[in-house]
Each structure stands twice: as C-alpha cells, then as structure tokens.
Image (cartoon, rainbow, N blue to C red; front, side):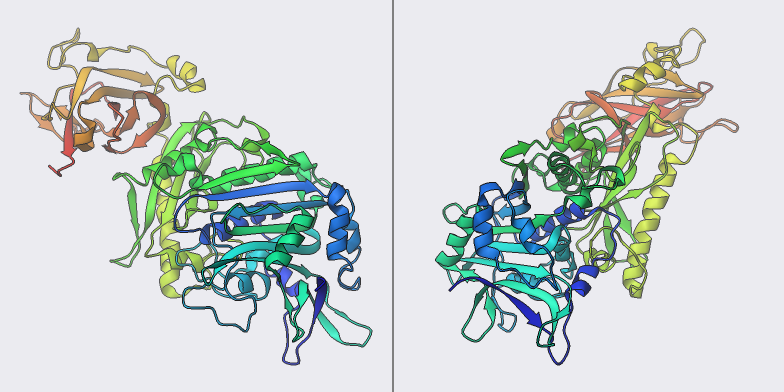
Length: 615
C-alpha cells in the first residue's frame, strides 16, 4: 500500500496539541543542537545491547539527486494550514541530519499505544513516536520522561522526523519505518479540529496509521538513501528533515545560520564535551563504550581523544580518579545513604585549540568547574566553582551520583537533563540534592579560596608556568642537600629524615629539597614505589623535629605547623593530587611528596605504606 500522511483529529475527551509538545522542553540554556546530541546519546545508551560497544554517528547530508525519491515518498505533505512550505525542504538543496546507532536494541516493542508489551519487551517505539510523558523503563538510564525527543522536531524547519529501525521481536528481526511531524493545530474544511500531530506510514484496515514494515520499510529506506543495517545489526536511524541551520547562528548573529562545516564541527564538539565519559579511550578495555563519528557529505570530522584536549584533560583525569581508593564519598543527613563520588585535578590553564575542541565548550575562560553526572555516565552540567587565584591555572572535577541516590538526582532534572534543581522535590530528594551542592561548594572553597600556599604553584616544569615559577625560586637544593640528620652550613639538621617504611614496597629516595614560590617555602621529597602491585596507597607525613631528635605533630608556638599539600607524579607534573594520601597506579613508580615548610623549623618526612593485603 502507498505510504501517506495522516493527521490526528481531537478526541472528544481531549488531546495533546503539537505546539504543546514542542513547548515541553522549555527554553534550555544549551543550544538546540547540543541538546539534540545529548538526548540522542542518552536514548542510544539506554537502548544498548548487553555486549559490545555502541556505534553512534551523526551525518549532515544534502538531498541532491535523492530529492526526487524523497518527494515521491513524502508528498503530498501534511496540510499547509499546519505545516507551510513542506515541499521546499525536499528540494535538491534541502539538508537532512541523520543520527544513527548500532549495537542497540532499536525502537522495539508494540507498534501501537493500545498494545501491551511482552514480558521482556520495552515500549520504545510507542514512547518515541506516539506517546508523550511516559516514565522511562531503563533502570539507572539517562532519560526520564521522554520530553527531550521534542528536540528532533525543533531542529527541523518543518518539525518533521523519520524513524528507521531494525529490532528483534519474537526471535526474528523486523524493519520499521515511520514519519512524524508536529505542526500547528488547525480546523479542516469540515470544521474538524486537528492537534497538529501527523504520522507518515501505511493506513491499516481499521484506519490506524502504522509504520512500514519488513521489505516495504527496507525498500523505502534504500530509496531515501538512509544508512543500511549490516547482517544481523539492530539499531535506529533518526532523520531530521529540513535541517534548520538558522538555529546555529555563530555568536548569535542574525541571518541564515551556520555553514554546514561550522555546524558539523559544533556537533563534533558537543559530542566531545558532553559524552567524553563514554569514549573508548576513557572507558578502557573490558567496559562498554560508545564510538562516535560526525560525517559531512561523506567526509569525517575528526573528534580528538579527550585526554589530548588541554581544557578537558583535568575533567577526564578526575573521572578516572573515581575508580581509585582516594576518591571522596559524599554523604547527606541520611546516615546510610552514600550520595556520590568526587575528585578534582589542577592543570595549567589554556584556552587554545581547534574549533572542534572549543566550539562546544560550556564555559568561557579557564576551567574552574565540576562535571556533574548520574550513574549513566553522561554529563549533566559543568558546575562553576571558585576561580583559582593564579591566572596560570585552572581545575576540573567530577561528581558522580551513587546508584543509591541516582533517582533523587533524576527527579531534580529538567526535560533537557542539564541541571539539578531541588525546587519542588520531596524532603528526602531535596536534602540529597542540596547536600551534594553544599559539599561541592565547601570542597572547592577549601581548596581554592585561601591565599596561602596554592597547590597549583607547586610543581616546577609546568609549561608556561615554569618560567614564571623559576624566577621566584631561590636557594634550591639548599638545606636539603645533606644527608638526613647532618648539619648544614647553619648548623641545623636538614629536613628529610626517614620514617618507618617497607623498603620492598615504597620508600623515600635521594635528597629532599626546598624551593621558594613567592612568600611560600615548599619542601619536596622523592618517593620510589618499588613494587606497585603490592602497594595500595601511600600516606605522607612531615613532622617537626625537636631537641633530642623526637618528632612532634605540632610546631612550637608562633610557627605554622608543616603540612603535606599533595602528590605529583614525577613523570607527569601537570596535575596535583591534593591531600596526604595517594592511591598507587600499577605503572607509576615515582612520586613527589609536597609540603609547606617553615625554614625556622627542622622537619622530617616519613611514609605509611598500605599493602594490597591491608597491612
């Protein structure tokens, strides 16, 4: 049967209008195309198969010679009273945006809203194309009530999409192809009011519009030039028809919008900044990841490895830190509820990079933010913290909600999933969301608000900062040049005495030394991890040595107590691990222990090494 458009009339008991569906997204702070990338990726991740990575590809294509096939399939269009100038988007110069995923389950389940899903089925097809506002059926998934699918319509100049999917149902594969459009509500010539919702497919004998199925769907997809499904692949192609470039104006200028190349680069950058926790380079081997591509007329726009992007690197490193023991556990007033994990890294700040690296950056200037996410591992937002006092440095942190608290944060999200708002939540959810926000505020304040010794000044050789720092250093290799306990030229024992360590696991090596950075005096000690596979963590101490050689934890009256500031990896000094304890990475063997130092005191370093056996 020939495919056609069918328009929805109002039901006597009431219906939802198409303009109302479009407005449910509100006015997000993010641009429409960034919202589209985030929403599409959430859908794909929630629909992933049990094994293998998810392939996620965004294509920008001009119809060109295919326009004849598109016109044959989609015309006549919905009534002009609802969608004006529909046929113009099907000209050879018309553009489409295709979001494809493979390694997913596709839009499965029943094809009609009146059918009940089977015991092992999800209602994805109906939720995406027919119903509005259904709760998600994916535990710990990224989506919530499905309003975000409206972004596919909003990025179309004619508010129209096609859904081309292959699913497994009843043990056999099934191809489905259906169109949907959201226009203005209107009255027809018979004075019947219509909602503005339209579907493209085939009319069944009972008058209901259904998708094209099987060979009919595959033939239509081939004619339209949509991405194919190889062998037994399942997944989905979502096609935005009549791509609206006017939504992608550079710098908010009036006009026809961004060029295809600029939009493609912006989409690639949106993937980089919003989906990097799913990149294979970040996830590592043995875990499911997403593989991303952006194609412009057949040419690929390269998306860089997140670890190679200076502005993004501290966030990635913090994310990886969540899997080590030194992570922080955030708790609220609920004594048995762990709310989430938090880590932060300091780096030399930079704002340079390619358009793909910078176009989708969600903040201006150097990073001083925490990437917040739920269990799904998709970025919710970049929460701004205090700006570091030193303009040469920035920081990037990650907060990830725990599995126990994930639903509380999900309830705090708007339809676009780009923030956590405690307003209107129940008491328990409100306490969790507010408690996490206060924890981040306090943590960042403690690290960056005080104008004393700044951790970001501590490492020599920090790229652009190294030259500036070297001009402030005097007396390097000063009192730390002699063996521990020997007098220097002033007659004082030097810092650097050894404490009880396990020499086969980790030990202090070489000579400690001091450096001056502005008004601060810093003491450094080198630590060698001899057997990283035996060491779980190392805790550093700096003690005051009093007359007679005894160690004291506190300094004499009038002198500031020495304090361990953090750890630097000797082979990569661009990021400080704050705190006195560091979890050992299997391939890292050398560290620098960094401490404040008052040269009126005699101090010694010591270590407490925790082995993998817990000793």
